[in-house]
Amino acid sequence: MSRIDDLIRNLCPDGVEHKTLGEVGEFIRGNGIKKSDFIKQGYPCIHYGQIHTHYGISAAETISNISPEQAIRLQKAQPGDLIIATTSEDDDAVGKATAWLGTTPVAVGGDSYIFRHSMEPKYVSYFFSSTTFSQQKQAHITGSKVRRIAASSLSRITIPTPPIEVQHEITRTLDRFIQLEAELEGRQHQYAYYRDILVAPRSPRESVKLGEVSHIARGASPRPIRKFITNDNGIPWIKIGDVPPQGKYITTTAQHISTDGAEKSRQIKPGDFILSNSMSFGRPYIAKINGCIHDGWLVISNYEKTFDPDFLYHVLRSSPIQNGFAQRAGSGTVRNLNSRIVSETLVPAPPIDQQREIVHLLYKFDLLVNDLTSGLPAEIEARRKQYEYYRDRLLTFPEKK
Image (cartoon, rainbow, N blue to C red; front, side, top):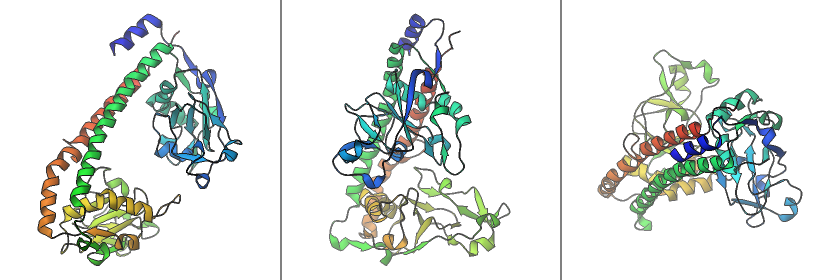
């Protein structure tokens, strides 16, 4: 960080001027792109939902296109502009931005703003991801179920405006953190490739329909659920938030339901698999507790005659199975993975002794890559926290008097 410190001492010894976003640029509302408008080839475009799910601090290519005839009518981001998603159900995601670094303009859909400004593009995008920006925007977010922020409110948020040389150096430093995290995640992709090869069926005869060798059912929710939530010796009520993103087992829950509620729900036992059938659908977890699942889950049980549980876990996590779930769950705004889809899924089922050999081969590699305390996820999380610390530190300046 010494070069940045030297630049600040030399170029702005009396502090850094803070300006409102409205003083350093203008906000232009995007318009009129639906997912149904996408075509394979055409004019590049960015839909606000893709800012939440696909794009990071910056982008130089798009994943979607629309017809040139439609593009004529739409607002365009120019190279260097920010594209900002202005709506979400999650406050943290409101105002998420990406700097457009492509060589040509890009069409921008509704629920987005284009921010045309006079600063280093990625510096501004990093600012939009910072704690300082998050704290300032919170007072301006409106709406109940759908949360949003207006251009007039964004215009009042203040940003430090150090000399452009400082902006460039801060960007280069933060880029290095992002690159390191990407390299670590690349090692996880290597593991996934190795796992997919090991669990792949050796012949068509080795595959079976999952529903023929196990019992698959949907969860159930007693309604209204608030009547059945209890703190007194109830039965664990399993929700998405109870399972860590990179975890394998369900060991505890934040809430419990009464025995009356459990009778109207779907009860599971240790060893059962559960899969989310909507958000993050298809991601498997293994229960280590007795509990109940709502209708956002599927349960796989009674598989033990055919599968070693660890082998089945690797199979369900494999790319061919996950991609198959994604394709068959539909391409609409809300995807749904139902019990029929899972039951009809072909999965490899070699003899159990071979399954255990494969599990043993994957064990040490899995420990290195996926262990939450000592493997890559722990290292990635440490690097992410380090990045967030330095991002907020580097984007905080004494204000010029």
